[in-house]
Image 1 (cartoon, helix red, strand yellow):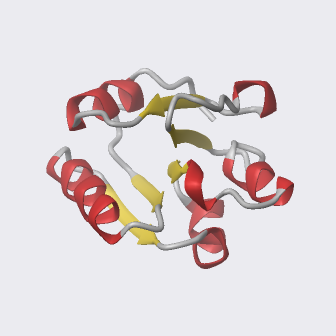
Image 2 (cartoon, rainbow, N blue to C red; image 1 turned 135 degrees about the vertical axis):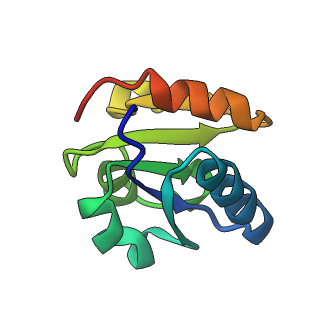
Length: 112
């Protein structure tokens, strides 16, 4: 991702949201952070990428909204136990991870 545009971060944990925002902003991204998908819906429709903690996925509609169905790139943060690749996840990153792994993944995501 060379143009370093807007990324929507969705995670229920305040510490995780802040850590993700810090790491992404340090790389030049503009970050909008939200606690859940309802709050993030408008942002996800316009952002260049969404980074979504799988813990916010409660319904099949949540999965649909999060995994690129809004014509955006999406990275799903998972525990490594459940995979969402068969449901359209652009990319998955198992927790725990370091900021460099997230940035590398963003750099190698295919276009929208």
